[in-house]
Image (cartoon, rainbow, N blue to C red; front, side, top):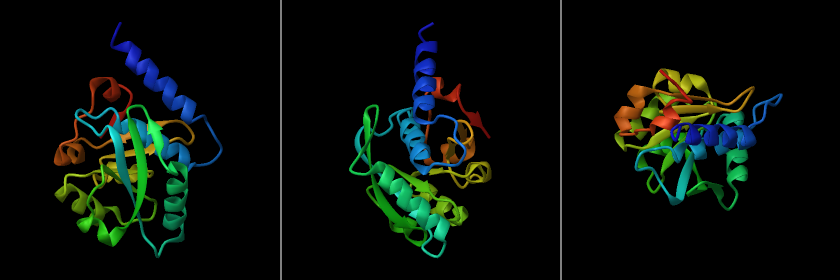
Length: 174
């Protein structure tokens, strides 16, 4: 019975931040991503920086970066974690430091970003399911049309990410 309580609490929290809507919402996606980070074994707590990876040559990527940074504002509280945001150009991921995770925006060539992040043991989160399906991202999150979290087992293992069992019951692993 005690194992069901965290699962029910997570489901309620995710549904509260991500009601069914007609279009994708970066603010809701980043709330789900932040909450998912709290389910990492030995994951970040307190204040943590989320690097928002974007391609300056792709308007959709820049727009999503701006939306994510606006959603986080001066700090996004998700349980024991408060996220702040830092923009990171896709070509600069290999030199990034001081981030707990990287949020990969739509339109970024995720392959090189994922490889650079794996080399640095940084978790990558994308809003596009294909990022996790390909292994370029550890996880993908989406609130539209319903909450969906996909975790790539191989990518997670490559960066040393281990998720708590209560979380693993609510996600799809590939």
